[in-house]
Length: 125
Image: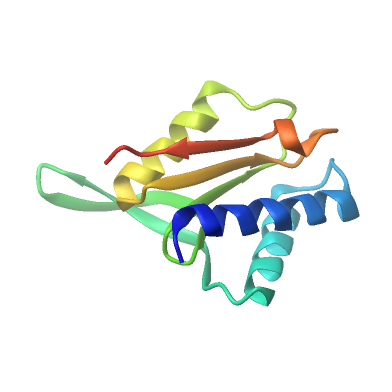
């Protein structure tokens, strides 16, 4: 399965969760629900996956954690904040670069309209 197909299913699951739970809950609640929905669809889902940083050929495990990795291809950062900021976009792009993944979704569940709170970020490797 390709990144775009996985992304479609992630967005569908996110909309289902947002409709059922609404905004205002903790990120961990949305992350758990999203993982559950995607596992029901048959995806391999990893949560709070450590992302090492390599600097001058030295691998450093310094605590970067991506929220969700779906199908080994798509990184999802789950937020429940007033508004997404540049730092959220940069965080996801950094995770994509460090993990050598092409596609990430930044999802802010703390919004009245989820459709305007899902951001697709591409790493041009």
